[in-house]
Image 1 (cartoon, rainbow, N blue to C red):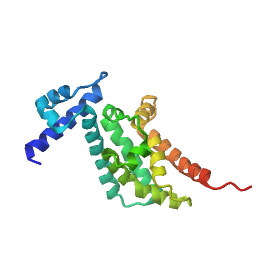
Image 2: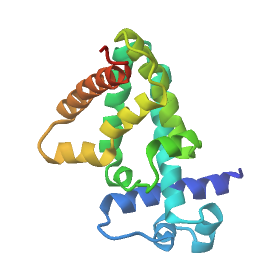
Image 3: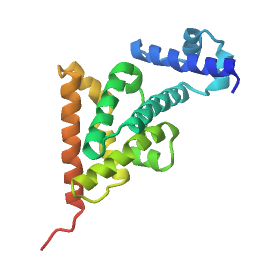
Image 4: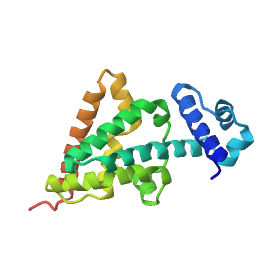
Length: 195
């Protein structure tokens, strides 16, 4: 990609994030273009919709999480906790723009068909989740472990916890503890019950 093309794309993503952070009403691609200081036609050359800009933004944040995960030297629950805490920080850093991503399709469906913006996040978490289940002495839950993580670490709910008076540290700590319990409970529910 040419440098001016890449620059315009970055500006559009950044502008969208700023607008969604502060806008109580829907945002248009024309507004995003205006704030990025590019023409609407340029915006449409990069993205066909506002949703597509948000997907690019979410993929970018997911890549930050993936890079953070790759740099960790710990394993298992310690790594999962570090990555999860970093996610909470990213959600707080990017705020409202993170809470805009809602799909009418389920997480597992989107994950399994390779929805682009979910891939880096899943790659950041797959190994720490697998190691954590091993550490806990339960079977590898695969995509369902990612499903549980996603259900607990939804950006809207993280922001809600913070707005309700929890500190970032408290919110992250409780979510990680809830995830540990969810993994154990999910695995136990899958085991055949003795008669």
